[in-house]
Structures are given as C-alpha cells and as structure tokens.
Length: 381
Image (tube, rainbow, N blue to C red; front, top):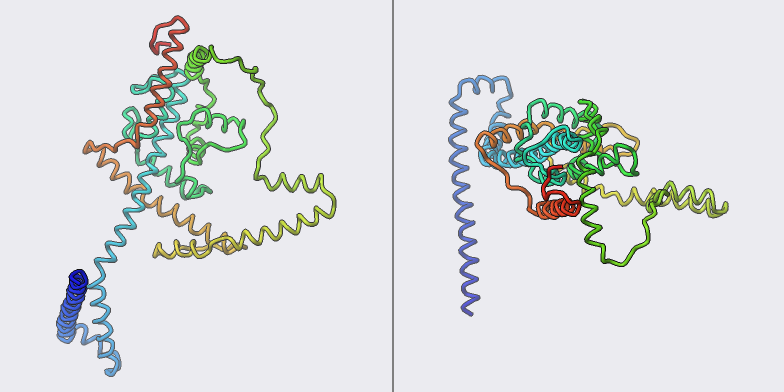
C-alpha cells in the first residue's frame, strides 16, 4: 500500500509540475503578445504601411503575426541547436577525411622508404606504416594538412564519380602489397582507394608504385629464415605448387548466364531468362524506399534530384551527391579545427595498441632471422 501511495504522489507531483509550467508559459505568451501588439500600434512606419490594405484585414493579420513572432521567440534556440548539431556532424565526418589525406602522403613515403630512397624517424620496419595509419594525425614526420590539400580533396568529392559509403568505409590505407598488386592489375579486386587514384592523376605519384620494394624483400628474407627454423621439427609438407588458374567468383551472374547459354538446353535457357526478369523485379521491390526517403527527409534541406529512367536510382544518386557536397563544404571547418589543435598541442589518442603487438612480433621475426643468418641482431641491413 505504501509503495502505491508513493507512486500516486509522484504522479500527482509530476502532473502539478507540468500544469504549473503550462500556466507559466501561457502567462508569458500573453504578456509578450500584449507588449508586441502595443509596439505595433505605436510604430508609425507599420501604421503607415497598413494604410495600403483593407482595414478589416489588419487585425487578423496582426494576430497571426504575433503568433509567428512568439513561435520564433520560443523555438528559435531549439532550431539553432539542431542546426549546430548537424554542422558538428558534418565537421566530425570531414575530420575523418583529413586522415585519408594524410594517409596518402604516408603511403607515398612508404613507397620511397621501401625503395631505400629515404629514412624516416619513427619507422624501423615496413609494418610501422600500418601502425602509423591508426594514429595518422599524430604522425611526426608528415607535413600537416594544407589548404591546397583541402582544395584538392574538395575537387575530388565534387568532380569524381565516387560513392559516399565507399569513401567513408576506407580500405587498408597502408597495405602496400595489396595496393601495389591492384595497381599492377594482378588482382580481380580493386584495392586502390578512390582518393589515391585521383591524387595520383593530379600529382603523377603513381610512378612511386613502380619503385622496387628493396626493403620489404630484405625483411621477408629474414622472416622466411625465422619461419623455416620455427617449423624445422614439423612433419614435412608437400612442396608448394602455385595455382595459375584464376578463381571462379561465387556470385557472378554474368558467369552463371554464360553457363546457362553455353551448356544448358533451350528449355532451361528460356526458363532462366524468365527467372532473371522476375529476379530483377524482386530486387526492385526489395529496395527499401521508405528508409531512403526518411534519411533524406531528416536532413531538413532541399536535395536536388536529376532526371533518371529509374526514380530509385535518381534518389540514390541525389542523396549521394548531397552528402558529398556537405562533406566538401565542411572540410575547411574541419581543417581550421585541426590547425587549432596542432597549434595548442592537442593530440588525439590512437585507436588501440592491437597493431603494436603485431608489429613487435614481426620485428622479433626479423631480428631472429638476422641471428640465424649469422648477422648482428639489429636492423642495419
């Protein structure tokens, strides 16, 4: 009984508080409207303006005007706060892309370092570049982000045919082997980030991928000695024979169509053609239009839509272009914040120490390999 009584008292107090707040707000609204109405009546310029209109319409207009003015007075701060939250969201997003800009600089230095054309304080082994990728804005040997960098990245966002999701979910930006393999067209996938390709076209830095990986090959020589010594007591394995044939991609509809048209009978080909049309229709029906429209509506801004034979594709392209444009607009603001942090000596803590653990293990492999090769346990090679 006592618990129920306490709950009833809390509910009653809550109701009273809301009632008192409502009464206070109504009193404030009334007081303000009376004050503003008096100001209108005493404003000679307004009264002169009203003479151009029918007298019977003036009072109703003034009443409506006072309502709108009160709403502006009451909700303007909320709107301003919402605008600030949206601006902060895009500045935060843009700040992440400063990391992409710096990672391209780091990758270019990695190419030179691997070719033994320079040394870098803070880099002992190749894996150090992947460690710095996770703490890129604190990397001590990189030139800070410049206005020219920002301008080029804005051009990239606004003039390139890029997908906002793809540039937001970045690749492994310092994976030298993967990126170089993709550049040399030795892979079915394209591991080269869009920004890297655009930057290379603008700067000619794709030539850095033609440099030899001298340092990497030396490291791998010592790592291989370590692995052989580690595995020497294991049962012998069959010699490795490289497989030259390409992989058959699992979800390759073009390959499926080739198989059907090449190896199946006419009846099966007709059935598959009908199924393909049905499947295409189902894919369109599975497109969640409501989610896309809800996301676009939540932006509370006009989003231009260009003509397209498929309205779904038109909406997707419009929203993608809108997000790229917003990101480009906020890059300078993120840059200002970045420069301020640099000036004040503020640093951002790295994501985690997971990569440092891998780095230390790989370093030990190289040093042990040096010992096994009768050389000093150091990195002087």
